[in-house]
Image (tube, rainbow, N blue to C red; front, side, top):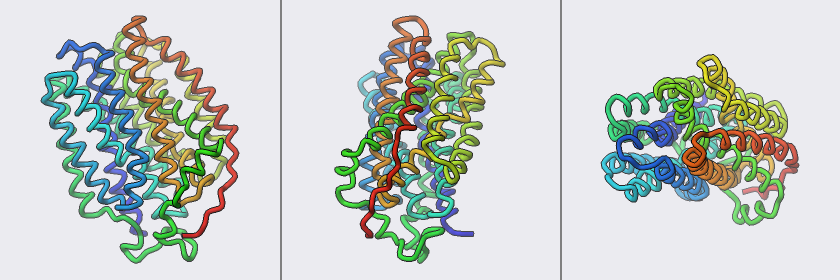
Length: 405
């Protein structure tokens, strides 16, 4: 077996648990409100800060991985995440909650969850890259969603502080496999990327100088930014942060809603891997048109759901589409700007994803406090998701000429 698949396994585990830490704000929102008396709007500020920093960490991580390698950056990320969760579990003020549960927890996750998969996939794989990207995308989103029932159950039965302590322990455990088995490139093992042509080595996969100054002058880049902004707003920001609270408004218990999020996570894993397989075979623009359109229609119907059959059907269908947008988006970054630049460019595109997520996390909480329900938030999300699908179909993937490294 090609050793790069072992790197895929370690990376997937790191992405799953580190990204899973970002489910904590949504999973524990209700318990934190009950325990502290802080409003949903105030608590959503921590979630929004975390999502913003999580996204801002993408370009920073892309540059750091180009200089230091993904192994070192991953180890730093794990340490930051672990320490931030330990401190956040002990805070007694909103300011400290925003700092550690928001800023530092978001930074720790953002150093790896946004671009690590893209860097590993483009360094280790030419053949099977779409499949690898699908595995990584599934790991990120499944980690977030599978953690929902676990953290919600712990939060309800013990406390939200205990739940954060659990996240810290699981994060710390990651140090062992990351330190022992993660490698920066195939060259460390005297290998070349799977399916690589002659001469495609580590040096030719390092990002070009000035690539972002060229990227921002191309309309295709801004279409990717816009569509992924909507992806973040309609997935991590809205559903990820407020699904449990919305379900509670419709008569479901927190644990029941979290269990449906776990179902969503399982089908998301299937859907994102399937999306990677499809990305190897079909036009990624057409895939994005279908994904965003399907997501928009499902969100328009979510306010009408009040029974287990309907919420179960939504969880399955939305789960298949939750982060299915990741493989075709990364593929377009590589097609448009070159394989060697894909990680860095995607880091900036992912930053837009998290700006959208942060905005939706705060706006949905404010809408709930202001109107008494989430209906306006879900209806708006459905409309902009359909618009994002149309925008994705307008991308013209004319590959940039890449100077050999």
